[in-house]
Length: 359
Ligand SMILES: [Zn+2]
Ligand SMILES: [Zn+2]
Image 1 (cartoon, rainbow, N blue to C red):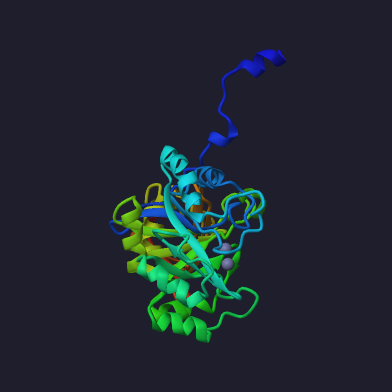
Image 2: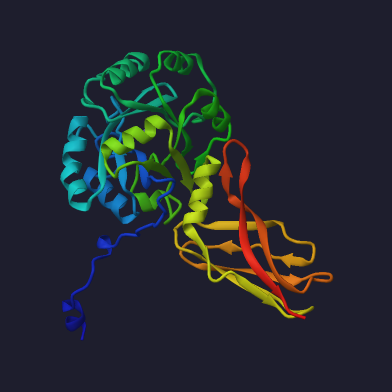
């Protein structure tokens, strides 16, 4: 029997991908990306092709492998040639359909920046930060300020200010790993920086993040390719997603809600006092929506609902005082408490429903 089972064809666990469905919105493709990942070529613990497989399994569209420039604790055993990271990973990325973006992390003290879309990751040598960022600019890189609150409160230091004055970076991590930097939200808005959420993973991904807690930058891209991602990052069309929470512009979040959630039928029928009715709301996406009722007619009680990813939730109503007989078109107003509109509010949505009050 054991032999028989051993011989049965099966799917290796490594060949299973969570498609992590997220709706395309506002006429763009919604790409799931992680632009800050380390490999064994710097201080990570993982070979580049394994990073690609992890990203495929996690449902990502694109990753950047961004090893530290000039920090190679495995140098006695592993090459320090950062160009090789991209070259080694590319065939696996092509095989699995994961978009691979070349990159590197340059640093000075606690101030670190990722340069993406670099053409020569070895050109930075042992330069200090500003000269390295100027080289990145010459390579037309997209540069982001990493973990702006690492080991300190996020602050617009002289070094960061100089880099910004010289237009040497365009983005900032609102989320790094499982750390969210609230101070960065107003800063990103004031300075016109693109917001990102990246893992900065060093060990195997499952040793640092449980399933669906991995930070993801949602990129609203015209096309599912490197050029599309670059254009979207330059234009600032991102939202950041970590551990069930999303931050972004109200228009993007509203569209994510509308593209994910669909009520099953829209007529609820109530037959007098003491009875209740419920509306099933299906969520086709991997995004959870936790709601709280903020608006409901005075003659009705409305209950909020948690609509879990790829599940349905129930929205319940029951009659309050003197419900008027007949059919009424109403809108139930909901606050989505885990979707945060920049800079400091939660998403508010309206759910149109028809209520029939029978005598
Ligand atoms: Zn760093
Ligand atoms: Zn890093």
